[in-house]
Image (cartoon, rainbow, N blue to C red; front, side, top):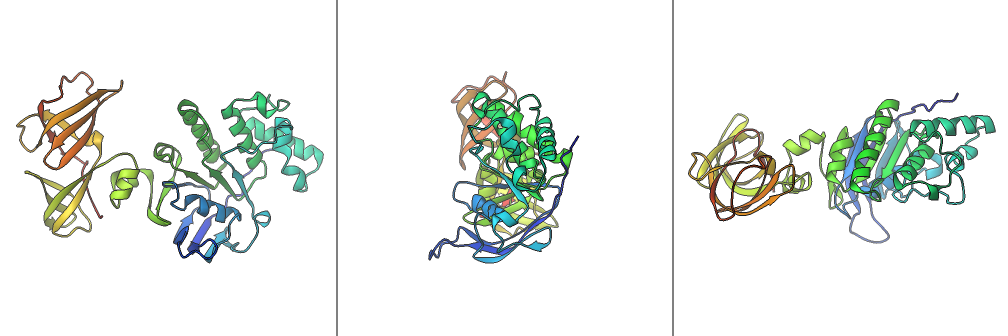
Length: 358
């Protein structure tokens, strides 16, 4: 029985830019990045940031205006999509509605030089891999959205590409199904050690599936790192606010010692990690779930008044008015009796606050 193999290859961008027509505004500007073979790397960012254009340049559906693109060390900058060993899973699935599931999965194989027996075996192996072994004779219209997405994944996998590309693959699914399908995609990627480039605007999805995340904003790379790096050490206010949620608070750095800074946050003083800070005004990013709510007047807390409290099952969402502006807090203590209008103190101890650049 045929098996699906990995031909994973690296992807490299060297100072790549993309302009459309005679426009002087870049869709992608001077991007350099390296995606290692066998890794799942997500391009994350808001609409119009350049992530989909970057993906399409890997696929050969768009050509770079400047710079070089290499796949497996080979310069493919000017190669058309048909000459690149990549497969793409589209947001719309792009299944042929009049063909059976099996015929959809076999479609690309029929143009790749495989005989009828090998084509049938590889298609079945692809369906087995995505958990649709017994669905080969059905039409796409007889499948759920999640099953159709898995057919699209199988169709891409059977070609054994050097790079597998996903363009917003889960956007048409409901929240619960998105979580299930993303877990399946990640499991297959790790099982086969595939090189996957994955585009999404969903921060939670990116954190859940990625070895690395490349955050893009205004056509450039805002930050590149592991999910934990980006969540715990955002490089700037955009990344801090885009990856999860963050309170961006004005502060003043009053001293720097080795890798630690002394920071005045309103009336309180904090010691926070700081690799590159200088004395002066700055901003502090603080995750809502890393703020402690204490009784009013508790030492080393920022005074505030509770403006809003919302119960959402697993936690409370609070909005606290302070002299620095409103602070959003998430607490798992759903039994806490804190009424709007009550004075509280906000604690920032531990690894929560991060100094950021503007």
